Amino acid sequence: MEVNVKNANNIINKVSKGSIAEELDIEVGDLLVSINEQPIRDIIEYRFLLSDEYLEVEIENKYGELYLYEIEKDYDEDLGIEFSNPIIDMAKSCRNKCMFCFVDQLPEGMRETLYFKDDDSRLSFLQGNFVTLTNMSDDDIENIIKYRISPINISVHTTNPELRQKMISNKFAGKVYGIMKKLAEAEITMNCQVVLCPGVNDGEELRRTVYDLIELYPYVNSIAVVPVGITKYRDNLPNLEIFYKYNAKTTIDQIHKIQEDLLEKVGTRFVFLSDEFYVLADRDLLDYDDYEGFLQFEDGVGMIKKMGTEIRQYLDSLPSNKPVEKRKISIATGHSAYKFMREMSNLVMKKYSNIEIKVYEIKNKFWGETITVSGLITAKDIVEQLKGEDIGEVLYITRSMLKADEEIFLDNITLEELQDIMKIKIIPCLNEGKDFVDKIID
Image 1 (spheres, one colour):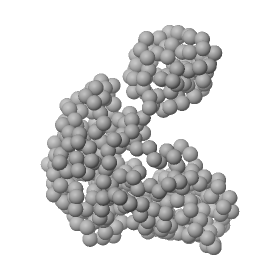
Image 2: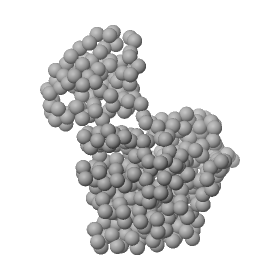
Image 3: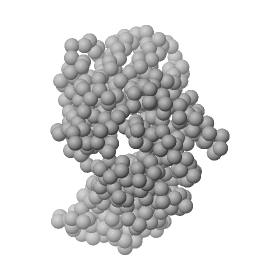
Image 4: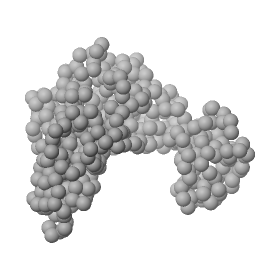
C-alpha cells in the first residue's frame, strides 16, 4: 500500500492482546487516519482525544480500504495500539549550541541515534527527556497547557537571562523563566535540571537560580544539579573546568545550606545534587528519607542511596540457609560506583559465603577518565581492561550501559558480540536492589 508520507508515522506496529483494537480486528500495518474526524498529528493529540468515552476511529487497512469504528469505552481506557514512531510526528531537533553539550563531544563511529539532539516537550512527557524550551512557539506552549503535558523536564541551567543565552548560544534562551511562570499558572508540573559548570553558573548564580525557581513551587517540583561532563573530544569547543574534590565540597556545602533554609521556609529541600558530587568529595550522601521520594532518580540523584537501601533490606528478608550454589563471579562498574559496588558485594558474600565476587573498576579510556559514570562505559573498555583477568563464571554489568530498548553499547557493539569476544556470559542488572541480588544469587 502506498502511504502518504505525512501520515506514514501513524502506521500501527503493535496491537495488544485483549484490547479494543484486537476485538475490532485492527491489525499491525493498518493506518490510523483520524479520531472524531480530527487527523492525528502527534501522540499528545492522540492521547488527548482518547479521553472521550465515545470515539469514531477511522482506520485505513493495509489494502487501502477505509473503515469507521464507533467505540464506546471507559474514560481512561486505551485502544491498545502502538505506532511505528512513538510520538507519531517527527521529533524536534535542538537548535542550541550549549557550551557543555555532550553530543558535540562525540567521536565518529557511535550509534547513529546518539548524534540526534532532541528538544521536544512530547519526549519529555513520554520518556523523561529534558528540554530547553528554546525552540517552542507560543502555539507550542499553548498546546502544552491545552493537552495537559505534565510533568515536563526542563534544562534550566540558570535563570539569569544573559548568562543562559551565553551558555546555550540561543537568543531566545533568556525567556525560559517567563515561559515557566506561564506553565506554573496553568498548573503544569515541571522538574528542572542544572548542568553545573565551575566558574560559569555555580556559586551565586546557582543560588539565584534555586531561589528564582522556588518561587514557582510546587509546580516546579524539584531541581537536579549535575556536574558538567567533559570528554577528550572537545576540539573547537569552549574551554570548561570540571569538578574536583575541593570545588565539589564547596558546592555540597552551599546546597546543604540552601536545603536547610528551604526545608524550614517551604517544607521541601527542593534542590538535590547528583551522586557524583558526593563521590568526588568523598562525602556521605543524604539519608534515604531526605531525598523526598527520589524525584530525580534518573538524573543520578540518590541512586546509590536508594539502591543500597534496597539491597540491604532485601538481603535481610532472605533466609541465610537459602541454597546458593558455589561459584565465582565478577562485576564491571565505573569509578563513581566502584566503592559502592564493593560494599554491596561484601554484603552479599557475608550473607552467602558460597559466592565469591570480584568488582572491577573500568576506567573510561574511550571518553577520557574524567567521565566516571557506569552508564557511559563502552564494550571496548570492558574488553581491554578485563583481558587476562580471572572473571569467573559470569560478568555482571549495569543495564544503563546499554541502549534503553536494545542490548547494544555506545560503541555499537552488542551484548551478544561482547559475550562472544570475552567467551563469558554477561548479565545486565537494573538499578534496583532486588534485581541486583536476585541475579547474583540465582
